[in-house]
Image (cartoon, rainbow, N blue to C red):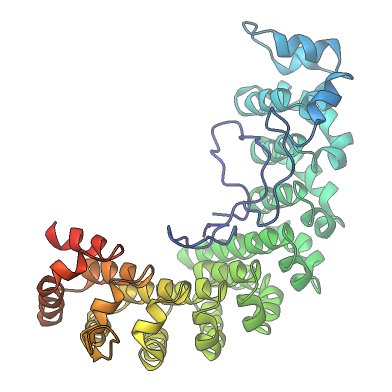
Length: 429
């Protein structure tokens, strides 16, 4: 999203972009009971800008109203007139920087004719460096990249050369870079990606730049997969190699990046999108730090992705850690409980049954002298979710029968506990 989970603002390609002020969106897996890292591919984990009453930061609109042209004022006040780009010729840049004006231009770029596109391009191109990092103007640049002619895209591509890195570190400019990666001719991308060499880690640690690195991984990996699908191994290899420098820098720093609010997103994108050889490399490196990451506030998201996209041996490794460190203890921890649930969801039937048998073990309980692990789990704010997931995914068989018998036998006792009531409801449904 990130949320993958951002990453470019995920937009409806057939509607004008929603231009409420927002940072890039998170894509990490979310849990209703956990605070999601304000991480499919946009995103922002920092404090929100101060908003005016119209949904804009500060008093920008109040200030710009004093300097708007009569034409823009007429546009704002006119409801029933059908405007085209020809009606605002000479005022395109001003309209781009206005919320309603920008939305209007986006609509015309989608449904208007080529002459309207030319009007926009003629005025936007000289001001593109100003507009691409403008809160409203950046959306117009994105629409030109999406709907413009090949000639227009080539002209916009040329304005990016030598400026990919600084633009990627800007709040709105990073969105233009991501859209360029998605829409430009694939033969143009390697020259643009070169600008990130030796700057991968600085981009990943930046609140905006990390989304560009995620998009590089996603776009080039998908192109490699598409080439493999049509048996073009040479071209697939070419696309894959374009992000080798990113993969190398990331895998040399797996633990610190996995424990970083932005770095963990990049590891997730590698596991989601990379071709098999690169994904295997990543899984091998991550396997060296499963235990460290399992209960980390950011690293747990990486382990969740390992369980979803990894190999049987990766799930075995995580399961062994869970059992060795205590299913009850880990299930009661805020972040590790997410991992246990994912292990239940993506594990094999055998692995699920092993976890159920752990739940049926008898342990010391200060209140009763002895209790099954599952009866202690259902009382806990986090562990009760693990039990709920277990009931949903464990296959029918002896292990599940024993689990249900244990819970039903103590249903009256469970009603006394706030969190156990969820389990009682599930048992009776």
